[in-house]
Length: 463
Image (cartoon, rainbow, N blue to C red; front, side, top):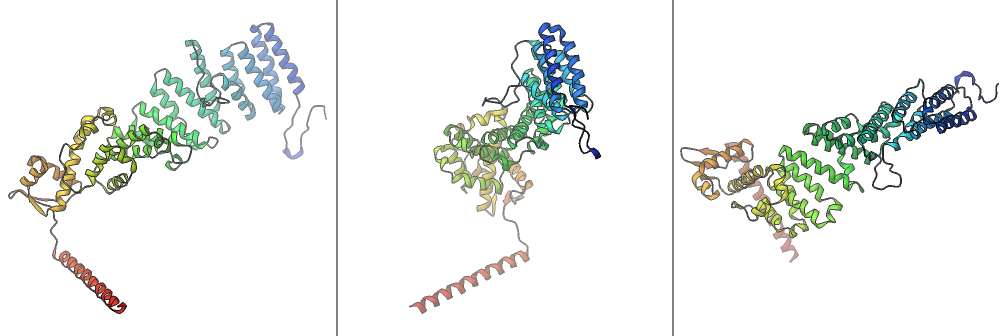
């Protein structure tokens, strides 16, 4: 057996490995000497190392192979020959039977030349591109990011690097003003399937996908992307910033959809976050938005439950307009329009966002009318349409139209006798239903009589 060989094991359990560490040290030294003599010798130095790279790869000397790849890139960088650097990266990473450790080493060496390092810098996330001054440097930076990203394609052991390079490329596209291209770049990566990324990194990546997708007005895809985030993960300790960002983006989507109740839930989720609760100005803003959109929400059991839970919140006392609004919606009394504090409510910034103030103003009036009709249905079996319109301060035609809408949505039961101008709220019962109710009432009465008799006898025995 010749010196420097590990030998070949029988049965193929081990590959033949040739120790080329000494030769590698010599050749790298020669390549550096060529560069020091003249940067124009870069092609000769790269050729020298390319031959050595093949020997190390075929000889399965991975440590020496990594040193050769690292040295090849460093020589290109030292000569400031970015074109040669990109060409060398492509060549070394696509060699036949190239070792995965060598490819990982190429990425480790080249990534700090395009991305800010997260080591020792709390503000750096590891995916922010390095700042450049000239247009030429910007083009080279983008080419290098694209090249490195192409190298990571389909390689499971480089999932984290691919995700960070993709975010960097999206940032570069966004800086150039091409939001659509930035969104398309991020959409190519299904980061939720990556096992090498932490839960926080995945959520941050998906949030960025949502932001850019909303930025290019693709609201349907934004909703699909938003569903990839597990809501339970957002309520974990330390995820407060991600939770606030997620529900802020969801609020933007629901505002586009004009979904008031979902907006109320979004702002309530923001309001209930610990970091928001610690800041009076922020929780007050979130609470106002929650109450506003609850007021604008259609009537439902879920909406009523949320109103009742908010009415027990101690913070409500510090925002009088919100407290009065919730009290009005829960009280079974007819409310006048405009309601107290309406001017204040309509001056809130949330009310005006998205140029929807006129839409929300119309909805506000409709919700008050619907509230009043539900109250009337509680107290009246039937009433003249003219009288009800007078009580609610509406024109008879407008009242009839709104009652028809509520009947269509199955919010109330109403029959309108137009010739006699009578509105009936109580549903006429058939004979079977009347008998059933009577039997139920008699049963309840007998139970009460029996209970009372038992208590009287118990008291007599005690005395």
